[in-house]
Length: 273
Length: 250
Ligand code: HEM
Ligand code: SF4
Ligand code: FES
Image 1 (cartoon, rainbow over the protein chains, first blue to last red):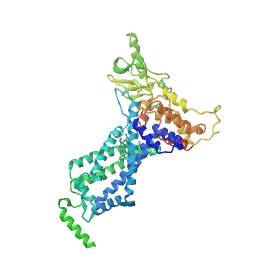
Image 2: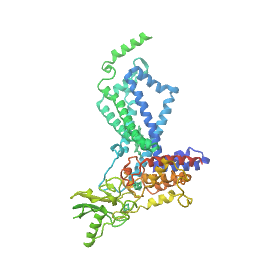
Image 3: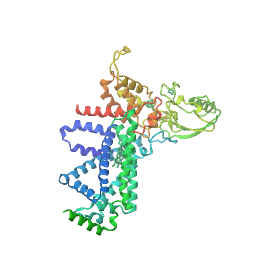
Image 4: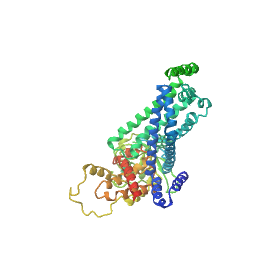
């Protein structure tokens, strides 16, 4: 509840006083209501799922080779003069924070609403994934922190300093990914986290349609299946990379012999020029 | 048949309750579940004990009074029936049966298995009506209603307000009940003019009563004796969003 209050306060401060009362009341009512908060969870969920699909598609460029992935990484960091990526980041952070604040608050209310448990508890049809949404979600937070430090902030100087052998002025995202997944413990952590994330989505995606009110007798089943398919595709797409990198199945095992590879690529580049 | 009952016993609203074991011996197969409890109660009274308190009225599945959670499932695991329609032939000699009240913070326990469901009445009072007199039943087809709408509305109107949906929900959410009651009126020409007002008021009262939030697990639908579909929840979500938006613009 306190987090909610702080959150609303920030929102209110940003709005002019004259317009404040009416708009604030509507916003406050919406945020305070069960359905309003759930709608926020669903809309931010759509944004996060959209990001995941795009992120996976981008990552899969690694299978086209170093040039494709590094071009893509370069593009991400430089479109709209480097502003583009920050627009995306700000949007994502806002969605992520809203999603977390709303779901933590909803979960606390839900626990309070069923304060006295059944001595003999039974479940008719709720899936395991649906019952542990808060835990799969909280694992995602831990994962996101690790992942950002690993590949975005690059706290490991060896990963941060890698240069593209074809164009040493830019960072070698391709080499970084391959090198970053040489540690089996890191790969195991990725497998566990992405599995939790996909469990989250196996319930979450189908939920979006119900929460946003698109469901009917006819569509509920297809939407549920769509959610499962997207979750499995994301699981395979994301995990193929750390898994294949660990077993040297991406590229041609060049990480074992970086120097000759660099040389050969450079000559290739020379010829092309 | 002989059964072991694990029954929730609680002296009063502020007392703490506990599970008490009662032996139910020589129960005829053709007895209903509530008749089985009647038999057990008669014996308790003869022995000078306090009978097990439970709610019931019509005993034919129409009033919505009976309210037991049987082996963890409101109205038992048989679908589409109320507790009063459960029969002992569904159990076997030697079975242990757990009998608990409908649990939710918004349904405080009054005594033993009896809970206070007046929160539902307050939700209805906040919007589950129409404000104009409709007079006598209109002539058939005088007010045209789409077939789909008539069917949906009629199915929603089948809700008997028993509260099993709340009792089954992991979050004690009342969305199936409120969805059914709002949808019933929102779909009809008589109810449509007050649709926004009704939807907002009923949802706000529901929230204020301390029910939880729907997490789309559909446990409610599985136990509803009238088999209300959770489509009414999707509709309620949609109507609430639209009503909020219109309220913000006004
Ligand atoms: C990339 C990250 C994430 C994605 C793609 C995602 C996606 C989703 C989606 C689509 C839903 C269903 C929305 C609905 O009910 O209609 C959902 C629900 C939920 N999310 Fe997330 N989520 C993410 C991160 C998190 C995090 C970090 C938490 C941690 C608190 C979390 C906690 C929850 C909970 C508890 C629900 C269930 C809410 C409810 O049904 O009431 N999620 N998520
Ligand atoms: S929706 Fe079904 S379970 Fe809920 S109160 Fe109505 S009849 Fe009972
Ligand atoms: S006693 Fe009336 S519905 Fe069960």
